[in-house]
Length: 211
Image 1: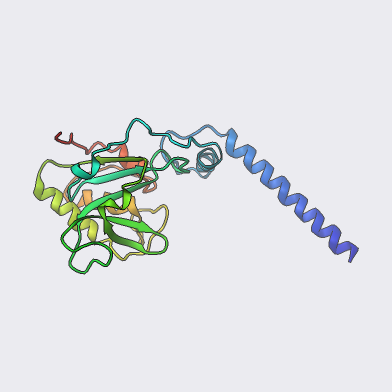
Image 2: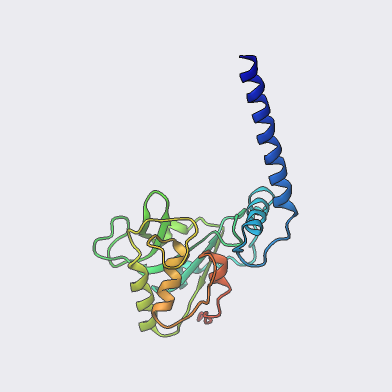
């Protein structure tokens, strides 16, 4: 019995030492300016974002009129602070709710949302009304192009959701749906790494919104 207890004590000590070293490595590696493919720089991004992240990193970017501006085919960028993978925590493609939508009124302006419990699904636009940071971005001035973006995004509905996604995978996430919708109309966001909101934010596909 004594040997078992000593063994468990050594095991606990070893695990504790590994955790301490992991924290040290995670905080010591220089931060990546873009979402990293490197496991080590991703490790840093996680620890800085979650452990020492800013509670409200984007106070100057919130658009208070976003619900009046957003149209099907637009992309919403959202952040709630302390995001492990960058400034933005979520994107959502604005769509017209289809006839068989369960959570949004058919024909209304809605969004393609994503969650681990429901996968990719359509919800009312005002689901994000209480978010502290919401910005609308538009990729085309052509209404027909925007309608096609919304249509392709809806093809991701009911897919399995995963937090970060690679191209070509059968599952989806919020950013992957937006990227593939833009690519379907000939726009190239040029996202070569992980499908996360910050990479899409930096894409050179956006036009100015009319005000």
